[in-house]
Amino acid sequence: MIEKIEKYIVEVSNLVANTKEEAENLRIKYIGRNGILNDLFDEFKTVPNEQKRSVGQAINTLKNNIQEKIDELISSTKKLNLEIKIDVTLPGDSLKLGSRHPVNIIKNRIVEIFSHIGFSISEGPEIEDDWHVFSALNFPENHPARDMQDTFFIEKNPDILLRTHTSSVQVRVMEKEKPPIRTISPGRVFRNEAISARSHCIFHQVEGLYIDENVSFADLKQTLLYFAKEMFGENTEIRLRPSFFPFTEPSAEVDITCTCKGKGCNLCKNTGWLEILGCGMIDPNVLELSGIDSKKYTGFAFGMGVERIAMLKFGIKDIRLLFENDVRFLKQFE
Ligand code: DAH
Image (cartoon, rainbow, N blue to C red; front, side):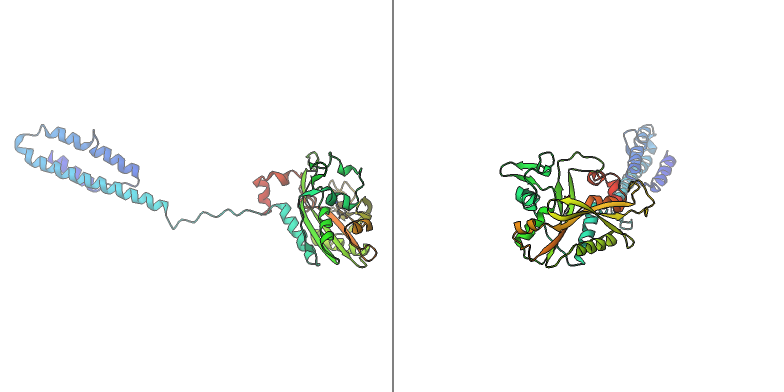
C-alpha cells in the first residue's frame, strides 16, 4: 500500500489545471466524498497493525500535499481568470462612431455653399402664427394652403400652426433687419400630407433671401447656377420655368440637368431635367407688409426641400428611408 501512496504523492506533485473547472474536478477526484483519499482511508482500516504507523504517516503526507496542491491550483486559476479579464495585450474594443444623417449632410453643405457668397444663417420657430406663414407672404384669405387639409393647426382664432414652409423666417428677418439682407434659413416644416415614397408630413427646407438696392432676376439666376454647380458638379446646368407663388412676382421653378445628360431616364422621366427648388423676385407687397420700402429695394427669394436634394444627390428612391433611422441605411453615409 505504501508504494501506491508514494505513486500518488508523485502524481499529485505534477498536477496542473488551466481553468477553475479543471481545478475543481481534481479536488473532487482526490479529496471529494468518493475521492481517492477517502478510498485510501477505507483501505487503511485493513492494514495490519505493525504497518499502521508507516502507512498512516504516508497517507497523512499525501493528504497534506493534496490539500496544498489543490489550494494552489484553485487560487492560480482564479488569478488566471482575472488576468484574462484585464489582458492589456488584447486589442481594444473599437469605439463605434456614429455618422451624420444624410439630411444633415446636405443641409450643412447647402449652408456652406451659400456662406461662401456672404449669406448668413437665420432661424425661426416651428410653431408659428398665421401672419408669418401666410398673411405677410401675400396668401389670399381663401388660399388652399391655409386649409386644414394642408396645414397642422394647433389653435384656431387666432390661428397657431406648424409652419408649412421656411418662408415664414423671411418675414421674421424682414421685420427685424434693414437691407441689405442676405440670409438663408434651414429648418423643419410640417404638412398634413399622406406619407408615401415621395412625400412626408415632416421634412426640411432651406430658404434663401436677398434684399438690396438693384437686386435683379439675373442676380437670382446666377446665384442659383452657382449653387447648382457647387452641389451637383461643375457641368450642371439650370433652367427656370415660369411658376406661381403668392410671395414672389415673377416666380419660377428651377430644374437642373439630370445625370443621364438628356439621354432620358426613369429619374427625370425622360425629360433630362430634375426640379430642385422654387424661387422668384419678392412681391413688392411682401416687402411693404414687413416694413421695407419697395420703391428703394428689390429682392429675390428661393426655397428648396433638403430631402429632395439628398435623394437626388445620393440616389435615394424612397423619402421614408430618411425617417426610419435604420442603421443599415444610415451606415452608408459614414
Ligand atoms: N415656400 C415654398 C414652398 O414651400 C418654396 C419657395 C418658393 C420659397 C419660392 C421661396 C420662393 O422663397 O421664392 O413650396
